[in-house]
Structures are given as C-alpha cells and as structure tokens.
Amino acid sequence: MTISQPDCSEPVEIAKDIYWVGSRNDKGFESNAYLRVFKGNGQQFNLLIDPGPSPDFNTIAGKIEQVLGADFNLDLVYLNHQDPDVCINTVAFQRHFPQLHIVTSEDTWRLVRFYGLKEKQFIATENFKSGKIKVKTGHRLRLIPTPYAHFRGACCLFDEEQKVLFSGDLFGGLTDTPDLYAEKDYWEGMKTFHEIYMPTNLALKKAVKDFRQQAGDMKMIASQHGKIIRADLIDYFMPKLEALPVGLDLKGESQLVRENYIKAFNAILDKVEKDVNSDTVNTLLKAFQSDGTFPNSLITKNNRIYSLRVPVDDAFKLFSNELCQNLDNNQKKLVRTIVLNCLADWNISVEIPCPGYVDDRHETAAEQAIFEEGQSKTGAESKPLDFDQDELENMLDGLMDD
Ligand SMILES: [Fe+2]
Ligand SMILES: [Fe+2]
Image 1 (tube, helix red, strand yellow):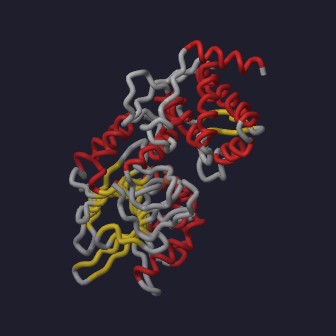
Image 2 (cartoon, helix red, strand yellow):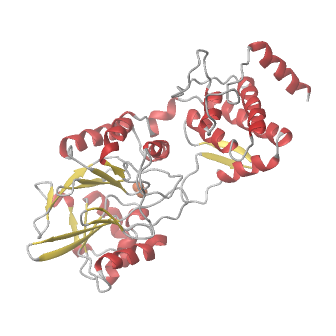
Image 3 (cartoon, helix red, strand yellow):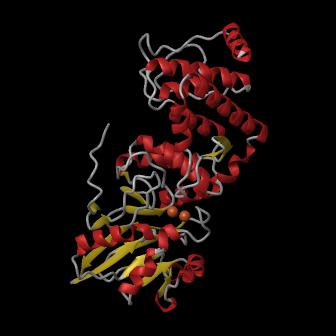
C-alpha cells in the first residue's frame, strides 16, 4: 500500500506537538531533527531532539521558527549520542540561547563537551533516578539506554504522552526517495546502515528487548536518519532488526569469496562495456562513488570495483540494481546472460528466496536480482531463461574465444 507523504520543505507535525524539523537533501543519507513543544500548567517548554549536522542548520532553524514564531526560545536539547551529525548544531543554538540546557548521558558528555558546549548547562541522564525526565508542564520522557547501539552511552527517549520513540541511529537507514514515512521497502537501506554502523547483533537484541519492555505501546519510531516508522509497520521492522547480523557478526565471510565477487563484478563490467555500452558502466561506477556523506557499500578505484563494505549478497543486489538502470529489454537480456556467465566463471551461486516468483527450478541470486529491478515475473518476455550446464559451458567457451 502506498501511503501519502507530507511536504518535507515544511515542518511536519508527526504527532500532536511533535514536529519533524529536519532537512531532505536527497543524497540518500538524510538526518532528522525533532522539536517537541510541551504545553501545560500554564507554561510552555521547547525541546529540540538531536539538532543535526551543520549543513542542515539553516533549514532546521527556519522550520523551528515556522512552528514557534520569530522570537522563539529553546529550553532544552537532548542528544542521543556524541556524533557530529547528531550534535554539532547544539553549539550554534547555545550561542543564540545562552540558557539552553543539554541532557545526555555522561559517556556522551565526555566527548560532546569538546564541541565547546557549556559544562554548567549539562544535565546527565544518570541524574534522573526514576529513568524519566519530568517536564514542568507535567509531561514525562522515559530514558532508554541502548549500550553499544551504536555508542556505549547512547540513550533513546520515549515520549510517554504521544508514544513516540526517538531512537537515534537505531532504525535509521539509507533512502532512495526523499519521503518522510517508511514503507516496507525501507528495510534494504535500514539493513545496510545497521550492518555498517552497529557493532554486534547482541546490542540490537538488547535494545529491541528493552524497547518492548519499556515502550511496548509505542505508536511511532522517529530515528535520526532516514524514514519515520508509523504504528502499522513497527511490528514489521522490530523483529527484522532484532535478528540482523551486523558489524563483527559479518566477519565470517572468507576473503576468497569476497575477492571472487569483486572479480566477477569487474568481469561483468568489462563485458558490458564491450558488448552493451560504456554508459551503463560509467553510470554504475558513478553511483558507487561516495560524496563523503556515507561510506559507500561498494568501493571503486580506477573505474572498477575495488572492495566491498557490505556482505556479498547485499553487494550483489546493489550491483545488479545499478547495472539494470536505464536498459531496454533486449539489453537486459544480454546483461543477464553476461551476469550468469561471469558468476558461473567465479563459482558463485547464492540462493536468495524470491517472493512472488513461482518456478520449480532453483533460482540463483543473479536471476533473482535481475528480476527484482522491475520486470514482471509473469508472461513470455520476463520468463527466466533456462540455462543448462551445456549451454553455460558453450557460452563460457564463447567468451574465452574473444
Ligand atoms: Fe551515530
Ligand atoms: Fe547518526
């Protein structure tokens, strides 16, 4: 189901008195910032959560002004952990608002103080013995530490009134659209982000267990990167994250296998450049050249794939998706044959289940990934080609004759 998406050039009220005030730069690695406005007991208290990276400052400040008016005040900043993309704007906001206080964990403070934040206005999460921040308006925010996800002192914030979990980097992800709200396909970008940034699945398991115990009635997950998860998809993403191998868990892949994939990818690029067109190869290589906003999943050097930063299955999916951009059907067929040949050449056969694909023969990772890039899986045109061993060998012979 496609959900309606708000206009991200404006502040978005994601729950009552909670505003997304982040930026969308459309580079695939977006940062989010949130403004929580508490009103009660005849008072107002303005909290900014994870104020974001410096390139987003003007957008964030502008959106806060749109919500609160030109002479607005900020009372408190909450920092999930110490990274500059979470924190650095706090320095600029504290210059504007000299009384601005900061709540974060002691572990986080030991690092963020070096940004130049005021020590006298730091309040440690550990000081809240009940595990809750009680705001003067009568509202409560529950503190949920998530050690080593990804920093030792990371601590999430749960809004008890609106049931929104501010999850920091957890549930963050890379995105291929500037949309604010997640749909199921957000998982691929979320998976890659966690594989790279989270140290071990143990940390994810503990975090998810604690969320279930302490924020089991949550209605929304508002992370510091990527898309916001609404109530209907929380039970979809939570178990997936809990089970995901990340960081050190992924070291089991042998170097030999990874090198075989790199050699197969580059053999595919050589062949596509020669037999299809060089634009396809150039576009693919450009897609994997990082602009510095995120460590790229496939690293390029001298116009070829040099190393992989993600598991080989994921690398193959990313590679195939990029490869099949902008090809017509005839070119796709040709590229598909090239891919199958090159993978066979490097003894690569990875089984990946293909939802919705009905065929009683085995489908390889190569076939599945090529199909996934948008062709219908029914009908004559998209019917998978049947290669038996003789045909493959014939084709390989043909390649060797070149
Ligand atoms: Fe981080
Ligand atoms: Fe982050």
